[in-house]
Amino acid sequence: MSANDTMPDVRHVRTLFLSDVHLGSKAAKADFLLDFLRCHEAETIVLVGDIVDGWRLKRSWYWPQNCNDVVQKLLRKARKGTRIVYIPGNHDEFLRDFPGVHFGGIEVANQIMHVAADGKRYLVLHGDEFDVVVRNARLLAYLGDWAYDAAIAINMVLAGVRRRLGMPYWSFSAWAKLQVKHAVNFIGAFQDVVAEEARRHDADGVICGHIHHAVIQDIDGIRYINTGDWVESCTAVAEHFDGSMELIAWRAPIPIARGDRIASARAPEAA
Ligand SMILES: [Mn+2]
Image (cartoon, rainbow, N blue to C red; front, side, top):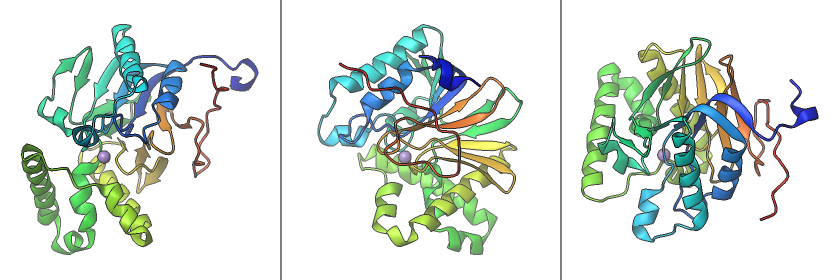
């Protein structure tokens, strides 16, 4: 690798995964993301949910030019041949009614199985599907498998009802913030549940977002990958052409744990 001596303007990767941009909320780091997208070309880009913050927009319209720029950038990449898959999250769940639909070259899917260049299979989903399991982990462990399946099914039905009634989805991150003392346990429970879901799908790993906690780690033989967010940490995951996965922190204000490689950020552009 000679990333340091030549410092290419654009990095080419096989796949990019990113989530939790929350465009439409004031906290979204759209400029950072735009810069990141300028510096990365991928054969496939998977948007792993909460790209647009639909609830925030419902309450008050906040859509500055840089939000448009991000959307335009993605559409332009799609036109130039990048395959773009949009997996809705709980903040952009209005898209969940349109699985299989293509708009502007972007395809919508509720979850996908991504086959990496090395043949490894990754279940890709946003992750909010499992909030109810995470919140009731101890109870469900006690009740067993049927309760687990029922809880997920009930959660999806309730989420659909709330959506039709125009009620906001319960927010994991807001809830976790209120319970700081237990936040670490919640993150751990979420990771275990999602990894288990990958196992149920016979996958080698899982790629998700939702809890704004970027990491690549192994959980009982399942590779757990969380893409993080573009609200605080500005992280994405890249799959290289050999199938290896890299967690990229783009001028991250918050350091990323676990010794994953950190991509060097470019100097800020004038303008
Ligand atoms: Mn979410």
